[in-house]
Length: 84
Image (cartoon, one colour):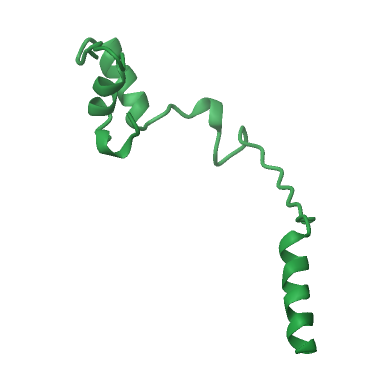
């Protein structure tokens, strides 16, 4: 019984004790190979922005969610994945 209590106490102290570990990583995103500022974005959102700017697509506004439903459709995100 005493051994069981020691194990429970040890597990409890690990769970309650605050996490002390920290990881620090320094990464220069402006250096190769990332070149963050020089790299044009290429993702669903950036392509949608280009389509809107080029008048290839138009988002529609509907109450009560505004442009949200139209935006989700344009980004091919199912409405069922959202809490509307």
